[in-house]
Length: 322
Image 1 (cartoon, rainbow, N blue to C red):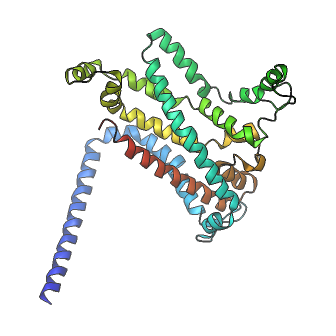
Image 2 (image 1 turned 90 degrees about the vertical axis):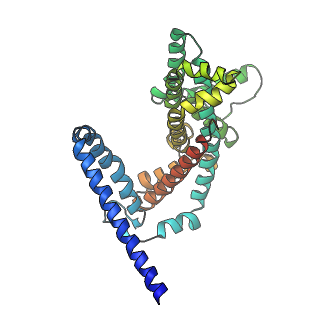
Image 3 (image 1 turned 60 degrees about the vertical axis):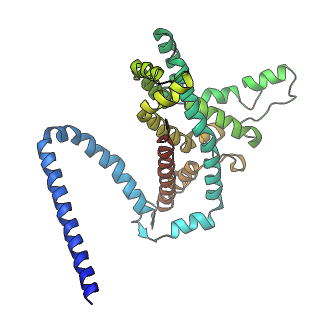
């Protein structure tokens, strides 16, 4: 009994200690807020807007994922019914997950690597030439639906540039339906997605390379770094971790969110659902069928997938330079 009593007393003591430490932390935090109230007032507009238009919609969507909601009637709580339906009854959703992961596994890493390598090479150019080349590579991401030129190039009739050239050279005898035939559709979607992804990440990498102080390279040479690859791994990349993390987040977001590009290029639904993604599935139930509860469950799954992927990438980037 004494042992049990002592254990209970110890638990109560630890609990009181945690409460006291929590109170101290809260008190210290409030004191710091009061001390730096001007700084908090400056960031308050952003925090308020971000909370209203980002955090609140995410939380509302998570709640709606546990309901059935058609916009016209109040949402009705159904528990895990939407998620059970997604993973056990919706074969098209499972196909969408597979297609999304395949496209993301190809376009995400390739886009990230291409952005980094291009930024690395462009950083070595003269300032005026560097500015021009940066604009050329960055232009697709700020030109709206500029990827529609690919639809003109690979139009399924004889007026498409690809078909016109292939017919002229005698390589094919009839036009190829590039964005209808699944044999070509997936490859073209990946190529266009990669082409359109050379944007914000690329610009962040350029800024990162420009921000590395040359003194570090001189110090590295003294410490035994003898070539550019060692400079890149042990000096440049560790100093660019913030830009690399930002680029990774943007690449992941772009690779998981290519639904709009798919819809514009191949239509909805794509032939045999060959490039049907989670975002296409979300648009189907959210914008066409108006099953908002089910659509919110899809959005929540996509949100969780992206969060987990970002955490994995963050873990991998922490190994850079070791």
